[in-house]
Length: 74
Length: 162
Image 1: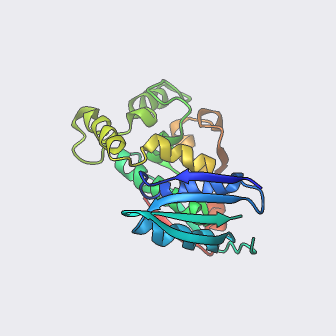
Image 2: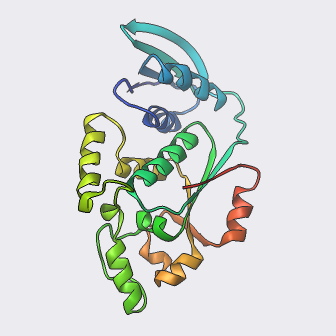
Image 3: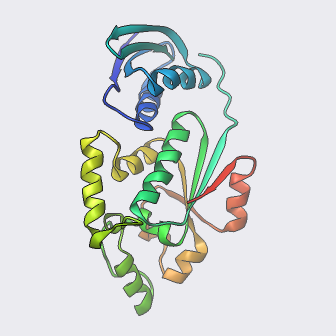
């Protein structure tokens, strides 16, 4: 099963959500997307909106400073 | 993967053809589509300039007056800032500032709207006035519609006029 990576630490609303959504649509069921994002709005809302769309949040971990990694399973 | 429930809907009447208001319309639309809203954008009057195939100034349309009007209005590359336009210099400066700040430009937002399969419509009445056809717009325009059809598509959701 493939794991894909997406870095949206330099993005702002709405592209944080847009890029995550477009990346997730490319995945097959069961595949994993690792998203690097910043705290604040992206961290508050990317996991939440991904769950609302039926994806599973496997893990949220702190990477460094204000950067977090969210692991999403389709 | 859980079952996806998609019951949220946002419909935007895009009347304005100014750079800043188009950025607002496409930011709302793409943001909503990204969090699983069903999104519809109904382009009417000045808003039609955002979806023309010809991105610059071209004499399109049926009849001399329509050709002049369409030339003066131009396409997406000519949209003015609603304030402090300074003969078209400001949108270019704004675009540069957006790029520098890593904020999506109008062009990127429109590309994102297309990638997210947002439903784009053009207004039949405005097209008649301006003498333009569906072929004058980008191919992603799903349908040419009027008020009743827009009300039907947007029923049960939120409607915004920009």
